[in-house]
Figure 1 (cartoon, rainbow, N blue to C red):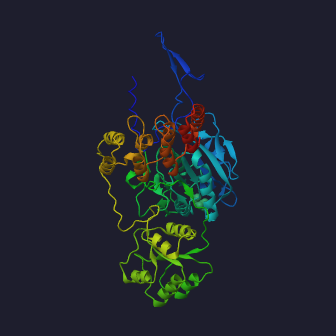
Figure 2: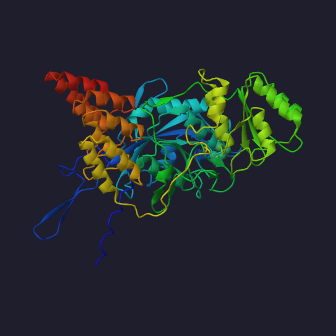
Figure 3: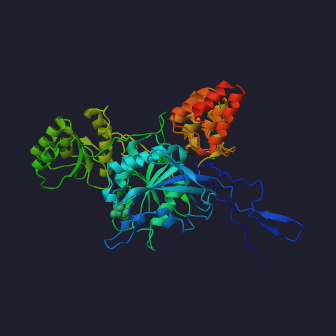
Length: 563
Ligand code: ASN
C-alpha cells in the first residue's frame, strides 16, 4: 500500500493569503476525468485549478541571463519568455496564456499573454508576463537613464501587479538595485532584481534557479523592499555587491545579513525586513543622474593634485572617497586642504571604506582629520549605495549641501548601520503561537484599546501586522472596517501592508469601501492602497448598486477607492 501523503507544509508567515484565480470549481470542467471505482460511486477528479495566484511583472533589461553565443562572444537575445521560459515546465504549467493588462511606455494598455508556474510547495501559482527593453543591454552599459526607465515601468504598472522581477546583467546589478531603492518612495510590494553568471541558453546555468527563486519569493512573501536575489539568497538591494566574476555565488552583502535563503524551504529573516513607516503613497523620483558625482579610490602615494583635479571637474557636486580600513587616508596637509577647499565650495565628500566588511569611524587620527575637513562618514555603505544615494539626494532641489551631508550618515532605506542601531533577534524558533497574539489583537481592535494594541505588538517576537488570523484577515483588514482612525493609523505607521488580500481575495481598502467607512478609505488611499485588479469588476458593480440605492457615502467610498 502506498504510504500516506505527507502533511502539507505550514504556510510561511506574511504569506500572500488570498489571491485567487477566476476559475471556479463549481461545475466539473470538461477535462475532468471520471473514475468509476465499481463501487456504485462515480468520482469526479478535478484538475486542481482553483489555487490562488500571484501576478508578477518581469522587466527584462538584458544581461547574461538572456544572452546567446555569437562570433563576438555572448550578446543579449530578444524573445526570452518565448524561447527560454515557455518550453520549461517549471515556468510553464501548460495552462492557457490568460492575457493580463500591462501599461506600455506610451501609456497605452496592452493585453499580454502570461505564463504560469506549477503550484508551489505552498499551493500557490505565480502568473507572470514579461516586458523586454529595447535595446537589451549588457549591464556594463546601463546608467541612470536605464534606472529611470525601470522605475517608470514599475510606476506605470504598480497597481496591476503584486510584485516585480527585474532581469539584469550582473556587472552593474548592485548599482541598479541601490539606485532603485533610493528612487522609490514608500514601496509596498516586492521588487526583486536578478541575473545570472551563465545564460539560460547554456546547459549548465544558474539562470533557472535565480529566476525561479525570484519568482517564488516575489509571488509568496510580502517583502516590500528593493532586493537582489542570487544563488539562493535574497539581499537588500542597497547592501549587495558583486564580489566574484566567475562563481555562481557572485554577490555578497558583507555588512548586512541576507533577508531570505531559499533551499528546500524558504527562510525569511523577518526581523530585518523593512516596511513602510509613513502614511504616504508609493512614488518614484525620476529626475536622477550621476553626471554630478565621482568616485576616487585612495592609494599609497596619491597626489593631492589628483584629488584637487577631480574636485575641480566642472559641475561636480559630490565625491565618494574610498579610503583605507576604518576610513583613513594619507596624513598629508595638502591633500586635506584640497578636500576642504572642495567642501567649502559646496561639494559633498563621503568617506567609505575599501574593505568589504566594516564601517568608517573616527577611530584613527587620520579619519578624524578628514572629518574635520568636512568629509562625511558613510559608515558601512557599499560604494554602489553611497554613489547612488548621493546622486539621488543631489537631484532633490529642496535639499541644501549641509542637509545632504547629514542624510548621508543616516539610514534612508536600510543602506547603512547607524551607530546607535541595535537589532534584537530571537535565535530560537520556539515562539509563542502567533495566532493567540493575533486573536488578542483582534479583541483589542474590537475594544478600540490602542494601549493594549501597542503592548501586544511590542511584546510579540513576530511582526504580527502582516499575518492572517483564523478567519483569513490581517489586523489591517479588521481595522479597516472598525470605527475610529487611531488604530488604522497606528498599523499603517508601523508598516502594515495595504496590499495583502484576505482569504476571499479582498484588500483592506475594498472592505473599508464596502463598509462605507469614508475616513478609513481616505487614510488607506493616502498610504498607497489601491484595489487589486481582480477586485475592480466587483467594486464597479457595488458602486453602481450604491448609486442606485441612493447610498451616497458608499458611492463616494467606491469613487475614492478607485472603482
Ligand atoms: N556582462 C554581463 C552583464 O552584466 C555579466 C553578467 O550578466 N553575468 O550584462
